[in-house]
Length: 75
Image 1 (cartoon, one colour):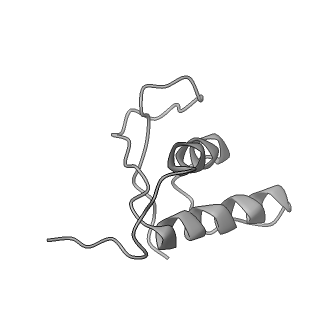
Image 2: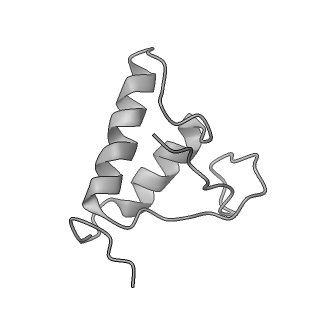
């Protein structure tokens, strides 16, 4: 799995990174972030090394209730 390159979005969720925040853009990505958060909460080793648990929670909170496409279409 590729490393996550998100980061501080300027909000008060505790990001310590100075990298630019990248929002969740699809249901598939939201699923990946959700499963990563569940893994960490279960005490297992996560697969995304470049993102903190606080950042995962923040991204998922932002995408909650939004209508996202199944896949993101870059074009």
